[in-house]
Length: 279
Image (cartoon, rainbow, N blue to C red; front, side, top):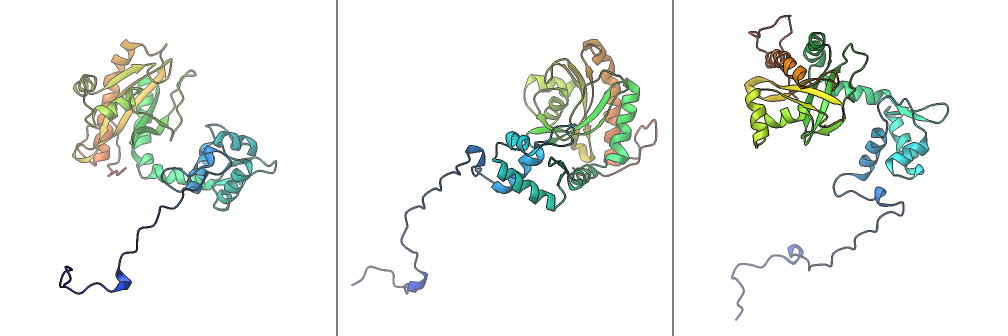
């Protein structure tokens, strides 16, 4: 007599197939490790982003050979990617054969900034801060494990610090990132001190010879939005000057917080349109 359960057996068509040996792992492409499939994501998209990110700030165009060198990809691969990106307007080939970023790349950045209400709130507030301090002002947001300069207004000084908007920078180096970490709840005495003071300054922490002082900006329900900072050469901004300017930066951050939260009771010295902002 059978020991199998009394219920009818499943039809043979639904029985699980016998286990098969795992398929062999495909060998990487001959062009090198830079061309191999990443652990996650789509390799074609990753490569296309490498090409777009190869352009440094202020570079109007690059030859194919230089794009290939910076991306670590074969020239034929880069050419294929560039032509594909050009079809959607993200790259343009010049008459001399060099490549430059296309209008679609600029439009993409403009749409990113538009989500933060740059024109109505952030940029005017930074201009006021620059006028009050005489230094360049910037607003940083957190994107994963890095901070990004979303908006920047250059100061009137001939000698000033330059930052690349959109570049991912470390959170744990420089006052803008440390303020974001502190008010995100990062543990440790250093971050507790920042929370108590409400601001933080640093000299040469991320970039030698550069001084910054930063304060947090909040939205509705005390949601941390980012940090506002002023920056300049350390020779012009020693520790005592940064301490003196800290209250001005805090005041600008408070004004921005009211504006971004849509609070009409903000202690505004000049009219700023209330807004609701969702990063």
